Length: 343
Image (cartoon, rainbow, N blue to C red; front, side, top):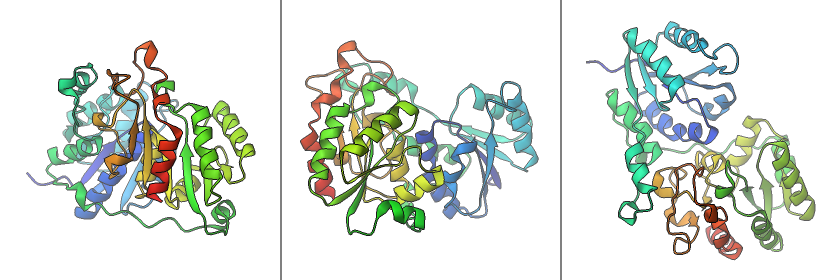
C-alpha cells in the first residue's frame, strides 16, 4: 500500500497538548516533504505551526458552526481538501465523529493510543508502577507510524528565534540581561506553585539585577495577580493580556529560560529549544507530559516521601485533600539555584 499523500492531523485542545504536536510535525514535514499535512485544530492555535513549511490549517469553530452536527460539516470540509488519511492525535468524542465519518468515506485512519491502562496504574499509588511511561510526543509519532511513516524524534531540529521586532525590543530592552519567563498558573491549584513562593523566587532573581523577567498567564484574576507582582519588582514585566499569541510566541522563542508549572507555557517554550524548569505537584513527568527534549534534572517535584501517592492523577484533577499543597515542599531557593545553574 502506498503512503498517504495528504493527511488530516486532528488535535483540538488544549493549548499545551496542541503545542506538543509541533516537534513531531516538524520531523514529519522535513522527512516526508511530499506528504501534505493539514492541521485541524482550534482557530487560536494556528500561530503554533507558522514555522513548519508546507502545512495548511483548518480551523474548528466548535462553539459556532461546527458545534454538534456541525462536526459532520467540518469533516466534509476536510474531505473536500483532498485528504486521503486521518491522524487523530486526540481521540475524544468530537474527533471520533470526524474520524469515523472520513473512515466510512474510505479514508485510511489512525488514532493515538493514550495508554489509559498504564496511566491508571501509574496513578494508583502502587510503587511497582512508578516508572516512566511513553511520552506524549512519541505517542503522537506512533500515529504516523500506523499510517506507514517512520519518525525518529531525535532528528528534530529547532527553528531560530523569531526576529526581534520593535515591539519585542521595547519589552526586552537594550541592557545585556538574560530573559526569563515565569508562568505561575495552571488549570488546577494542585499543579500551581504557591504564589508567595513564586514571589520569593522572583525576589531572589530580582535582587541579582541580572535578569529581565516576563510573567505569563491569562484570565482576569490571573492578570490582576501578575500586575501586582509587576508593580513590586523593577525587573518584572507582565505580558499577560498584552500580546497576541504570535507576539507571545516570538517573545518566548527569544527567552533564555522558562519557569513553568505542568502547563502550556512550558510546552510553548520547549517548542523553540528554550530551557524549561518545570514544577510538579500531584502530577509527574512519568505520565509523559514533560516538555519536549528537556533534561529530567529540570523537573522539580513535590516531596514523595511526604506525599507518597504522587502522581495521584494524570491531569491534576484528582488528589487526596491533604495533597493540594504538596508543591510547598519545593523550596524557592531550590528553584532559583536550578535557574542560575542553567543560566
